[in-house]
Length: 324
Image (cartoon, rainbow, N blue to C red):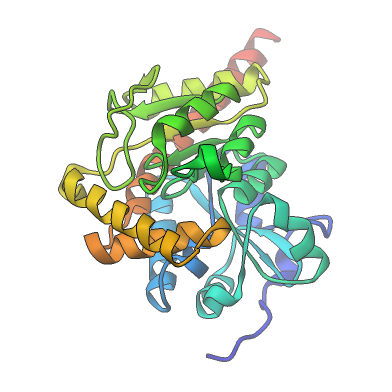
């Protein structure tokens, strides 16, 4: 495939620092539902053309449930909020040649005029910057196993502590130390909720054995929680953990065995830092099968975003009527 510059770049709206897709800009201006999506899953999650098909399918799920998808990435040094098909395919074809970009990498990628596939932390930063309150991903990072020795803690957690965006995910990636991750989030004042469950999910499995203080049973309750967080200007994010559907949930013992084997292989191969997560997930996927968690999260996230948009619009209408 011949790689070309996006044909519709001139149609994007922004000051030059960040470009917003017209339909995303219009939806935000009208108070409609928008769901932010990361781009690391496109460039680093799977090979082409499967990654491009998956990205399109996830966006279609968001649209089919009443929201506008806003996939986030940095292209030629410019952050984009919402990508067209050509830009999505460009990321998919380039694959791992695109830099995996967390918050710490944003300034460097922009200054160098490079291409960046945004992780959870970078996607949250840009979503908050343009006023998108709901972000969907597969699973977030966390405190790595043996993190008390390595201090290997994902920037996803610190971002949740300072960025007011609700993250809809399948919980914490199961290769990580879930109890310590939840303790870290509590320390940073992050509200952690489960969706239609009493226990925090473990990415590939429905339950981790860890309880959380907040349970949400429908999009409307989720919207009320997000709305309260925004109205109070708490400044922190919310993690809404959605268990993987029962029909896709693999045996916990099989998953745990695969994780232990992958962790051991990572240590033997001296894999650490931001290379550890894709290495471990790739090995676990090979041993347990590939599960498209993000599609279920996109379904739930879109419904929550629509409920939130309706709630905020009805609240604004009530204020307007009372002022008459």
